[in-house]
Image 1: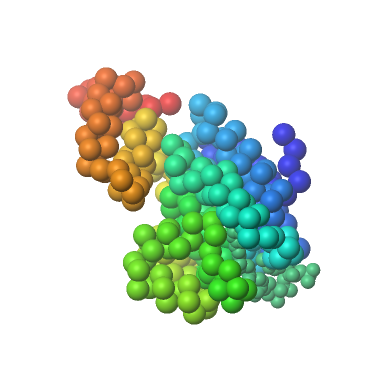
Image 2: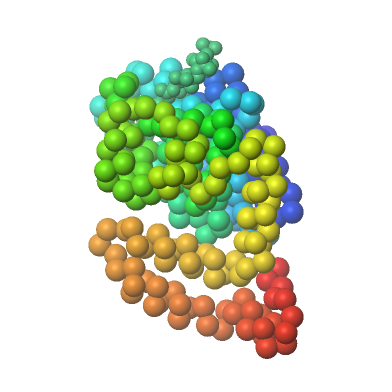
Length: 258
Ligand code: DAK
């Protein structure tokens, strides 16, 4: 499928999605959210995808926020409806993806852009990246799950500081507070992400998917994560991957989960 706002490249079981609106610093408009939804669903339907990677086109930005020119005209009702729809179509889709998702933050990750990165499972930021949730400076609050995911990642005190000051932080500061997993030089991003992806690829996709589901249960209100873990642990037994993983160990060879 041809997209207008994103570029999709599939290579060695990795589904790389580049948000491609560099003249707008890759700002997320509705059309881009819809295209991302289609691409991520496609990746998840393929039996061979082992990792979904998101990044931004150009030299300056991952994603500099929701498209301000678009959301400036919304009414109260539209705002709530769009937050609901956007969260389901994109942000929850990424967070609940059975396939690991990685955000390569190669520049500004602001507002909806940082919310997009936070919905991914792993975040790597280049040293020049600037991150923040400037929504309150525009008279709104983060509406794509940012108040929740930031609090989960950095704790309540730091989340309140980041959101109420609307200030940008460097990649290093983001690493210090647990907002990103790694920082690296621009030219090292590809090698570092490849290293992480290769480790993921060696492991059981069936177990990885259940592990993600179980970890997410920890943060789902009204759900007992320990109970979910027990149930999912039980479900691993006698799966194709469990048989291969345990057999490979006993035969002193590397498992082949493909
Ligand atoms: N939206 C639309 N256009 C944007 C944009 C954005 N978020 N960010 C940048 N651009 C555009 C600029 O307008 C400019 O376009 P032209 O003027 O050339 O046509 C072009 O990208 C290049 O930007 P600059 O010339 O400003 O570049 P600089 O290097 O000077 O500055 C900057 C870079 C990142 C500091 C600056 O562009 C900036 O402050 N950008 C805005 C950052 C921001 O406030 N982002 C929005 C945060 S609020 C919702 C749910 C969630 C949200 C909204 C609605 N619903 C459920 C409805 C989330 C809201 C947000 O994300």
